[in-house]
Image (cartoon, rainbow, N blue to C red; front, side, top):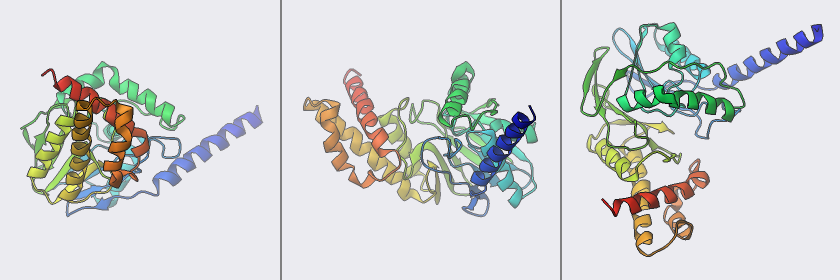
Length: 314
């Protein structure tokens, strides 16, 4: 029994050190005078990255801090709190969740533990889907994909609903809410931080990462990107990959627009999705080294073909 207990202690300690060692390799990049982003890995959640793959961000206001998409787990949320503490001792007053995919928001709860009065803001469609079971599905998926690394993460649902066209004064800062149709997930908001000339795209943009579109719309995500481009902000923070300027949004639009239009063209010619694939891959060769390209390109073509065929009856 003594040896069993000792083995458990050693396993627990080694697991904790592994988690600490991994998250210690990340730090918040200062984007401008008030915006900080922790740029996460771009591969899918796994045991090595402990489910961390998005870009948690925070904005330091006069009296408090606003967080955008704190991450996928209690460990990711703890890292975000650590990075905030390096910059300021102001409390976290608000969290924005850009959409329902759990890699972006399941860290809400660990921040709420430290700041029980925090207001968590999202699209009403996200709130509805999360409460209808999608949150728990994501909890379970993350545990499975990370071989248990995210176990212990709990759900803190967003409760403040915001939709397209809404302007919010949050912590004395101005945020415009942009939501265009189904876009990436059917639950998306994009955030325009006016004073900081910063635009948070959520997963409508994934620079150097091909995004899943299983519950999205190619036509709507192109419209969402047109909206983001039209605002001509200085800084664009994607859901995955490095922060940059308007060029990274334009590049993402090029990918979606090229793919969708080629699928429509080849569909008119009577080609099946597997027959289109090599032609479309050749047209999108500049994206072939992006994370997830091999995994997602075939799915994108099949999903776009279904959307093209559906549009013929509209």
